[in-house]
Amino acid sequence: MNLPAKKSIALCVLLMAASLVRAENWPQWRGPNMNGTSTEKNLPSTWSKTENIVWSAPMPGPTAGTPIIWGDRVFTTAANKSKELLAICVDASSGKILWSDKAGKDRKTAGSNHNMASPSPVTDGKSVFFLFGTGDIVAYDFKGKRLWSRDIEKDYGPFIMKWGYGSSPLLYDGKVYVLVMHNKVPGTYGVKGHSAGVVDSYLLALDAVSGKTLWKHVRPTDAKGESTESYSTPLLCEIGGRKEIVIHSSEFATGHDPKTGKELWRWQFVPHGREKWQRTVSSATAGDGVVYFGRPRWRGLYAIRPSNTGLLKPEAMLWKHDKYANDASTPLLYGGRLYVLCGKTKTIACLAPRTGKVLWAQKLDVKSQFRSSPTGADGKIYFTSMNGDVFVLKAGDEFKQLAKIEMGGRNCLSTISVSAGRLYIRLPGSLYCIALGSK
Image 1 (cartoon, rainbow, N blue to C red):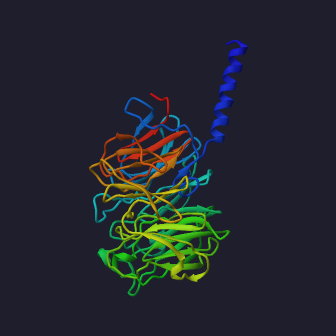
Image 2 (spheres, rainbow, N blue to C red; image 1 turned 180 degrees about the horizontal axis):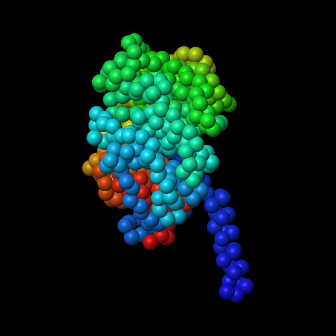
């Protein structure tokens, strides 16, 4: 090989390395900004089985979790046919499974759409943390070595949830946060293992290095029945110049100190009501000191500004929207607009975040409902139906559908993630990596 050729190869390697450094990771369920958005550019507007596919990799089983990406590693989970819960690491360049570990045993839930591999992993770039619906949480290094493991159910009692635990862990400032909002009545759904009396719901903080419990904050509610149960993920955001963990569940929204778990403020839904079958699925989103979240079962979309401590007054609510409300899908705040995916009516609406004014709303041409959440990047909105139809919309004040790609599948629950100019789509039996110019 001559000298110019060697120099060209070296330059290509350096350029690839520089591109990797600049690339934005997707370290947890709602991405690098914890709101479902990415700053990545040059993302595809459409693709097919032969166009813009970098690779597709078969997976050993389904998951509702979103792929997590850091550098050249993709992390996902699966519940296989042998009822094993798997923590999986995939090579981002090829789709090859680099390592897989049996982290628990799957078990039945009330619905066939769910399994114990529902939570998404989370990473800080050095370690990766996998939480499963069984209460098993395992920390690994990037080579697949176990660093520590815990059984949350063994330590604090079994989870009492009709559809199986689904909250993803939150990682911040050296702590792994686990939210357990479940039924307060022992023995509900046949779940045994609690002593007589009320079962506590709580926010738990674990040391990321050792896995040891740092604190456990009990989060009380006067909600009843299934309404005490939540599948949502705690949100880290900034309100009034301070970092807070926001929990939206059990007929209340609360803000918590990340260092201690102390409750800073509490807001209850208006009008006040206590239904028995109002489980919480979606999570909150936030921006500019305002928190947005939907009341369970399409009972309204709310915007509040938590401007003080304690029980917030009614005027903390900026607006409420009844017609275009979410249930399972978390709202997307992107480009100065709030996008709300209404899974039951198969409609997406674009609202003005400050006022709740409807800028546009469109019923989508799709047979199945939506359970995943929308992702915003490169001026586009991406989301997947339960039958594997991926919609690509142009973000803006007018509805414009760029593509509908029928990828196929059943019970597709995972949200699309973005990193290094690529889209990652987890279907029940496969993982896709998609980018412009790929074949």
